[in-house]
Image 1 (cartoon, rainbow, N blue to C red):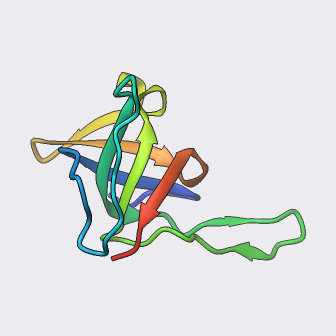
Image 2 (cartoon, rainbow, N blue to C red):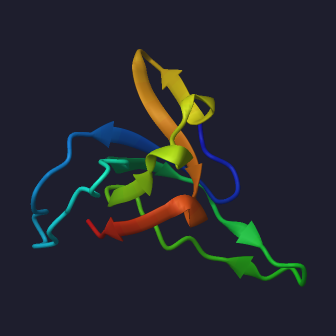
Length: 97
């Protein structure tokens, strides 16, 4: 399966204190953040004039999103693995691979 438009398939993982690129990943005071690896990225969207808007997130990136953007309605299961399917604008930050 391939995401369409600006959708991104994310596999959730445990929070890490520091990424291999040196970014310190702090958990919010209320612990409402989800960390994950980008598994697949859609091709992007097109503007009203037909110009392609490129995706800035790439496969292998580590991303952070708020738990409110990772609810049950966005969780899917493929080959016995659970993923979160979100739109790129729902991500708060990412670390490039």
